[in-house]
Image (cartoon, rainbow, N blue to C red; front, side, top):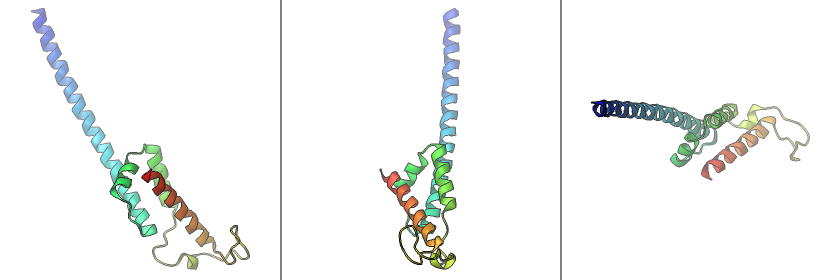
Length: 129
């Protein structure tokens, strides 16, 4: 009788473990889907800003990043100025004189765009590694 009780207990524990695995798999799938949606949103922002599409491989790599990295990507893309509607040089005041690169008549907005482009390129290069 005691071996029958142990067998039934083992069966119950196996069923419980299977159910817990199924729940964990479902939670992981939901979390991965949310990260992939965020990666696609970041890819859309990147495409809107730069005119370049990120490949699915890059989006998958972004989605596989930890939550802190995804948050950093999101904040980076939210800070990027949106120049899709016009010339960025028309959107800022002239710095006057020489800028840090020694260019005369460079605008603050153009400098921001260059910095944003460099940050975006760095992001893409990191994703492609």
